[in-house]
Image (tube, rainbow, N blue to C red; front, side):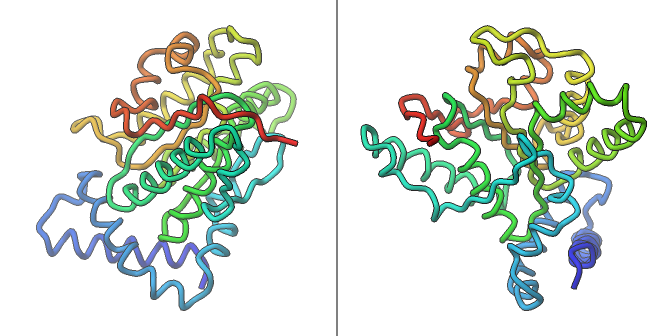
Length: 266
């Protein structure tokens, strides 16, 4: 059965439960809470129609992803090897466990998560493992490299179809259950002291981050995972404080710090 039909079944079931519970279907927090319950409850039924992983890879959201360099990454928690960090195995095991715990928590509670640390230490890999885990729980997922997104903004002046693609990407980024913003901050430059991010990118990310929050309750209604090579202070130096407030977790337990691990890229 196509993914779109599965999502439609979840949508209808969520509305029915909301109606029976006497809750306000216009309240995004109530609606998404019930929807998550429906997703978890229907996982085993969906598994009978095919592997969740295959549905994830072929979903409209995932197919709309923007990967760094156009190269799709596939990674699971089983692929994480702390032994590759021979000088700090315990730290590597710790960040892997923290990401796993956060992914499990996201099943019942949408949240903001930040993976921060130097290049090549596995931030994107573990973020992808989180997406794979949540996709297998029935959530829609999407990856967006902020650097590639910035390149699209450059191209929109030369290619007429890029403007429409940007509108479509924004729509998908606003509504996907779990969004990964990969390498946040690289669009400000690759130097140690990046410059302020271009205004059109800031405006786009503000609209996306805003749409993923319940502004009345000041709580996420969809989960957002961000990876970055920059400290939160440096992110605040290149992005408007309103964007940082909407993307960077206020709860430190939702920040995974990779400082101390070495670059393992071959």
